[in-house]
Image 1 (cartoon, rainbow, N blue to C red):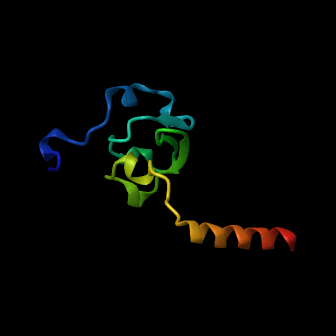
Image 2 (cartoon, helix red, strand yellow):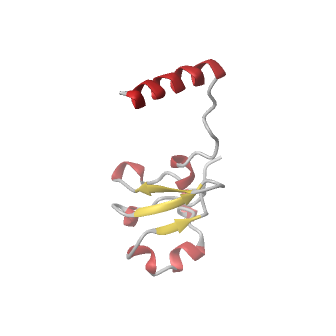
Image 3 (cartoon, rainbow, N blue to C red):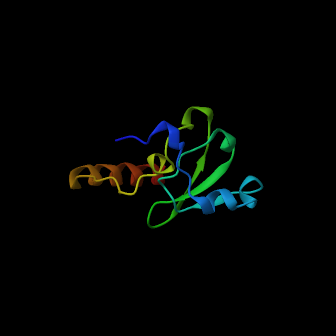
Length: 95
């Protein structure tokens, strides 16, 4: 279910209290917070469980959650594809 419109967008209270948020890059662990229009053209570091990944807010991303743009799972490659990729990389290094 989606959130009721009368409640407004969810943003953690600690996230709004930060006054440094608008001056520099801020770190976000709260992936369920919604991106507001006041965050346009700002850089964020979103935690994916292991490392922080950089994220720049654009106009098209308003209304989505921060967690949508930072995946937590690694991409899976079959062993055969990994061999092909490694061969291509070794050929490129030799050139």
